[in-house]
Amino acid sequence: MTNPPAEPYPGIDATDLRRWQQGWGLARGFTTAVESDGVLRVDIGLPGRFVEYVVLEADEHPRRVDKAAGLALAARDPWVTVPTRDAARTSDRVHEHGLRTPPLPEWMMSTALGEQRRLAFPPGYAGSISAQDDVVRVDVRSPTSEPAASGQLAVVDGCAVPDKIETLSGHRRRGLGGAMMTALVDAALELGATRGLLMASTQGRALYTSLGWTTLCPVVIGRLWD
Image 1 (tube, rainbow, N blue to C red):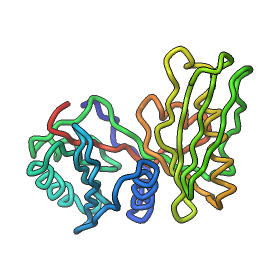
Image 2: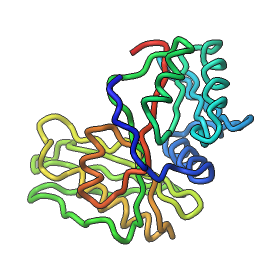
Image 3: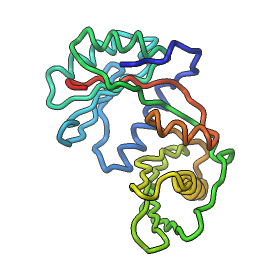
Image 4: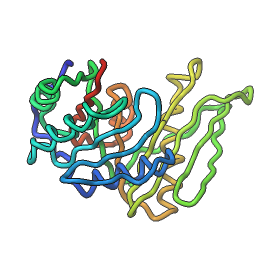
């Protein structure tokens, strides 16, 4: 894994990490996580990602990484998700248990929703918003009315958690990601949310940074395969 050097990232505390997991799970329809000794177990039930262990405050309690890795090795298709201010050291600890990590880390990010940069949909594209309880979805169609992009967001305790912000091939690099985030954040503000939390890929991080989101820390993902 190619890790960024250790930097003075602010990190994410246990309360916000629980909120992020609750929002992400709500958006995707997963069961409620079960917490034990600083590790959240989430039953995903998908091939290649049957169960996930999310480690709270790993930098302050590194043995929680050991616990999560041990649980993962006894589970089917496990993931171990570790937000950390020191990705290199945490990756080494995960590797010691025989788990592998992807080439690039994920990233925890946050923003005050009212400060996010606002972008409109490009000419000819239109986004439609639908909501059910505290989950909002945006679907975008092209000038020829074909599906072009989609995304969703859940609100938990005044915190908005965007998820699955995806643009289809052939419609990328046109500003749809930023426009979708604008639509979702506006809907979240109407639901009373004031802050946002998300986990981004390295590619997605560039988009969210351009919109004003702040990086909290890298996230190391441990699996039984690369």
